[in-house]
Image (cartoon, rainbow, N blue to C red):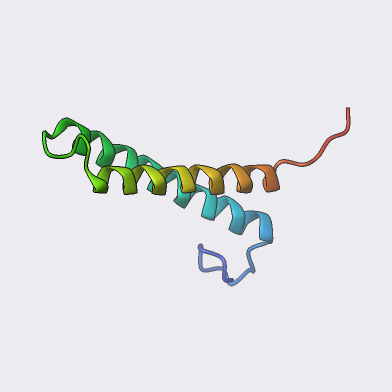
Length: 77
């Protein structure tokens, strides 16, 4: 993958993971907003759409946790 600055350097694997992690966090925040808006609507309180959004948010949280674990070095104390 090419460096995002255009310098032509290759991004290392950790940089790619950090970039992906930030994108997942943005999507997670976006789902938070969508869920909050739907919960405040009368029609959305028990809707199938609300359940789907919550499942997507949970899946993103799991993926974020997995990437964070991958980026955090294992240190034996």
